[in-house]
Image (cartoon, rainbow, N blue to C red; front, side):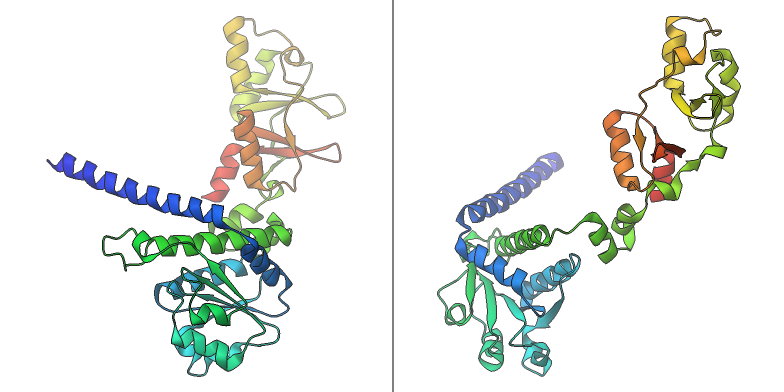
Length: 324
């Protein structure tokens, strides 16, 4: 019986998620020139982006305000009620773009900020573009969700409307980031903290093993000669160099298993079985990108090269350890 109840609840959850995705897909099909014009106003804003809302819509406004900051936009959140008790002074009506969030499109508190401050440009993200409030703003951006579309059986509880507001607002944010040509370096500068900051700031140079700490062997060495070096370092490989100490190849513990399975002969020269077309990376590569490269190539280490100079090696364990 418990299993049946669990399955029923799981199905309900699946149905709700499918409902959300369906409404968001419908929203994407309804995007028109209003979205383009909203994007233009955001990109051309000479002042701040002022995000304003009340209730659950206000929480969406606050989250989107913070998200826009992460791509370098100057933003501020204005609570709809507090705006009418002095906080409205934060709005520069000539330069700022005020972005309102109101599902009903009916909010005397929010309307009052327009009639009082008369911002030159304003946007309303709403489910009702026919209200007096919707006619007061520069652009009313329709999320195409109605009361009956809410996922909760009591249709007034915000659910689908919140998802649609978030979806269209994040679509705007991603388009703004694209227009601003935001790079990983830009994003890491705005977000240096936490796991994201770590992933976007740590480079191979920060964690590589320098040449003098690597298992180096000469290319004339035999397979049996290199075994002590391979086992005494925790690299999973040896690096083969020539008489001028230039890197010639790499030989991994996986290579060792494959070679010995084919032939138990250990007197063969290492240069005859080493990998010459080894994968390299520059020292300024993000460690996260180096990890992706290893996963794509199905390898556990990268040779670090800079201007054709051998700088060291980075192992997958070094990267994972640095992120832990």
